[in-house]
Image 1 (cartoon, one colour):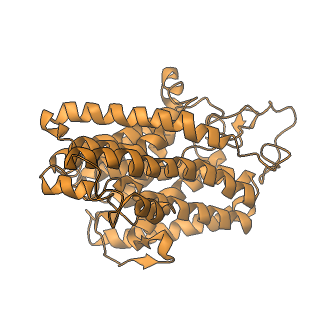
Image 2 (cartoon, rainbow, N blue to C red):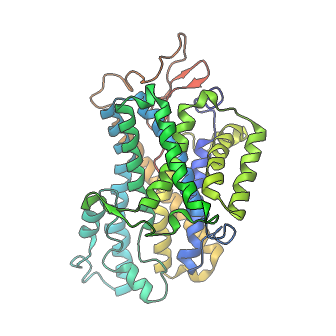
Image 3 (spheres, rainbow, N blue to C red):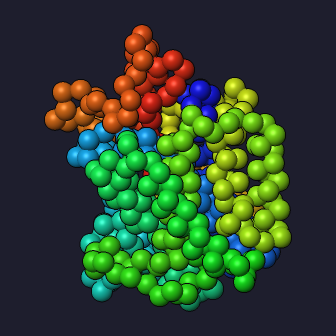
Amino acid sequence: MAECFSGRNNSLGFIRLALASAVVVSHASVLGFGDTEFGHHFSHGQTDLGKLSVYGFFVLSGILVTRSGRRLSLARFLWHRALRLLPGLWVCLAATAFVVAPFLYWRQQGGLEGFWGHDRGPLDYMASNWAVAPRQNDVSGVVATAGDSGLAHSPSIDAALWSLRYEVLCYIGVALLAVTGALARARRVVLLLAAVLGWLILRDAVHTPFWAGFGDSDYHGSIEFFEVTGRFDPDIVLYLAFAFALGTLIELYRERIPVSDVLGVASGLCLLGSLHFGYLYVVGLPAFAYLLLWLAIRLPAPFRRIGARHDYSYGIYIYGFVVQQSLVALGLARWGFWPFLAMSLAGAWAAAALSWHLVERPAMRLKDIGSASPAGPPAGPPPKAGGAPAPAHPNGETVRVSSGRMDSMTGPRFH
């Protein structure tokens, strides 16, 4: 893996776009028509296309964020993560509260009287949700009004934001591992942590082969560290942390992971088998992790150009739900599934493009403020002499290529 997964010579950009778009596709059936999401019946309730895509995002995030954590100082690591996550999120919240919601309210009520002074208005929405934990679902009742009219099937205007606080929790875990030296000098500690997470998941699956992971809400209750961070479901922490840890292990042990077409095909078959016959999280999730990296390496060259320069995946994820709820509130789902899906994808992609070019990419240009060098010394072994110069990665990080290996790269934070 260390030799093949290098520089921009991979299809990670395409895979991220595919995962983000898959979330929109999966949500189309439930948001537009109140049906179950794709894959729910095939997996016997274990998961669906949307949740499986989130697991994929966490695997990829585990690889890329761990790579960043090994290379950067703690302060710069946290600064880079904040720049990649928060500006896009805050503008999305503002656009939802001050553009989308007023328009929907005006269409529903024939004016804006009562919108700004609503007890759960746009300012309350911003104040409640700015810290990556959505604690207010609606803005001035626009979704509730659509629900009362029989149009909306979800009470939230952007429920897709739920995974961001779990992503941040994983960032904190990487930061702690970096500070303690585990990432650079004691990777077996990470292996042990991943094994513990895997054992806890295996314990759930032993008596229930079709265990639904964090789909079984409130199984172990919930935890609230601070009011602003919202409540954390231990089941969600466990399953997403395991997916993230799989990505971390791939990064830490990349020189020992073979790139095998036989294993790639076998991992795909294993994923499908576990989806249909059970034990998805014990067997299928590790197979999915390998499959994603194998595809990133083995997909044909044209796929490597998709998403290589412009990363719309984060924008698709955070705006897709808002776009679909807006279409639902306007009654456009009545045109049928395929027109609704086409409008959903077109709207999500358009919003994501604006977010990338106007917000996310400009924000990432601030990553080196206060630093004499773009990245600082790497936390791992130094690059070999004669290595190639470090080209800039489109997501705002530096890619250091040496003897065919990529020593650092980062990507979007999704989920």
